Image (cartoon, rainbow, N blue to C red; front, top):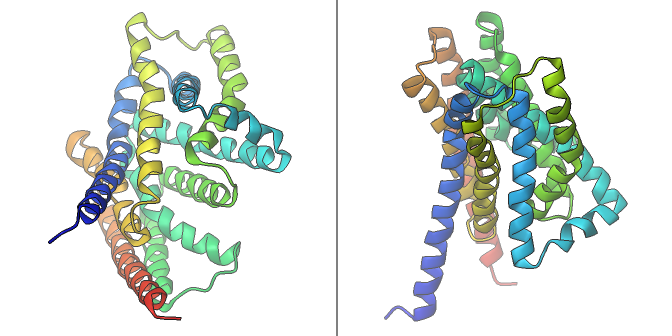
Length: 307
């Protein structure tokens, strides 16, 4: 007979899986929101509002949890504050590039950047952290490199979008992993550090020809904070409750949905050269996922062995 604790544990895992899947799904469809809003608001103004309303939303959550002081404690730690100053620049670059890609109808290129990010993380682990590659990881990287090389040679018009997203998010993840701060508190500090730039841009932009958002669009700008914070909260809930290998597979939901949104809803062009490039990258990712799962299973078996 199944114990109540076993049922509760299974229910918690299912809830965490749903939270993780929902976070990646939101990150996948958010391009539709930016594509729509930038019909009314120019991208840099939207970025400024995203920073402001993300701070408002995250600070409110931390306040009601009694954790608002954690933001200011993080700022008092010089090493942590410097680290978060760097990550706030990286996430701002990532946000503006993605908003521009959504605005220009280049979400296929954006999805490519996020497809490549897990492999970029492996490469950073080797170069920065001195980690050793397993044979299948090497093959995965070679397939991805071949796909990117094919695209550079045949169709490199918007490859900068993929490169900027991959590099900014890859280095962002690397630095945030090494900083001892939670994801929600970290986002709060990052948006707080970016706040003067955001307010300054909104104040001076009209003087340099940037149009003011129409009155009816302001609720959409407020929503930018909500759609930034909610998937992060879901993700933060899921990470300690879902196996690392499962999270590694689930992360491909986001770029896959972005790709489907771009090709099926926004009707972006997808040439035969891009198909060849993506096929090579997707094959590399399949091998990468299988290898990651096997490595995780092997570690789990070793951990279960009696001492």
